[in-house]
Length: 613
Image (cartoon, rainbow, N blue to C red):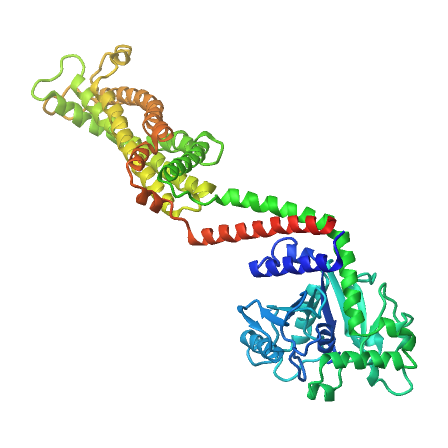
């Protein structure tokens, strides 16, 4: 089996890689959150900084009154076999700090860079890694100290803001809570214990730490707390003796401070029997042992989460597309495949797999019939206009039997009105097809990464639709003109001829070639023409949709991008590359996904290798 150091060191390594890639939050649980870490919680001036410095063995944290920790500090300790101690910040990855006074200043400066030189807080963490042979592998998160009142320079909501920030860390199920409480404070009023009890009521994730034992009033001690009788946790309480302010001012070496702490417990009449389980070194060892146990218990769930995430990342890469090939032939093939993907979506819209194609049927079933009904035949076939047209059609020679030329002119004039609805149907279907092209481009997932190719396809498709529209317009106009060029004579032969009677009174006024016309005859002519036009209208109501579908919809399905394919085949490699010019944001997204995928695969392999060897 793997050693404790190798397992926890691997967790630190993976968490560090997650931090570099920004994979420490978002939807669901990230790998960073799935791996256990220790969050340090306590009130202001509770001794949190001293505990952390004792664990690290270095004096590196900013100190002062009020809120000193104003941003979360993610502290990753990496145990090295030998060599000098040094520190690195995520925001300054190329700079190695060997002077820990400089580390303290950098923490303070980086805090000010985000919050300004104020007393406000920020939830943007500072990431610090310390490499040393004198530390245990551990990830600790130092959080702003809990407070009860806002001081001058702080917002009224500072108390709630700090608690919400701290809570967002400690409520995660993989977080180990290090609850810091001063020994000279009543445990019942401890902010850290109160919050830990709320998020971890069973106490299985909470370690209690009692600081400032040497500052308690004479005659009092904290044995009831340290022995678990005052407030019981599942894990033992650990007492810490912080460096005195005088030691801090004198820059007393941390090794010396640890020795003084150990001597204090060993010689204390109150805590001597607990000396082996007290002190910062014991606390670091205890946390490491617990972390190792937690990691082992959660390896199966961590591996399961990693495998699920790998599948999701692979699916996301497939969705946004793999990198574009550099070869011209491969690029041409890719362009054609993308065009075919668009064509499939477009056909689905037309054939009903996706919405939109039904609007074409609406043109034929609603718009065209409605337009035909609105044609002004009543005005054209009024008695006055019929009389005018029939009279003028005879010229100097009155008709002998029936006003045939008058009939023809009335019919021709009526049929001409059909051109408007016919052309309007063409335009309406053209508009629908253009809209479906736009929607299809937007809905073709494979195309989303190539804005230049989207524009090229849209231009080519719309140019093709314009050609189809022009051909369709010519065809429907021909259909209307055909109705004028040859009349269906059987219709008129079947009309029942009725003998015309001259009016007994108030007949039409005498005029050239119309002394024999009267209202009844004119009405009969108008009625006959109207009946014929109705028959033509029914015919065109069926033939116009057929022509439009044949010339526009059918051609759009068959050859929308035919011309485009021919043009693409003749393009040079440079032009093909320009057509496959990706959206920079998408390229960056693919790069990040690929890096995360590599991280998760490496993490899975390393966890498997270390955990079971």
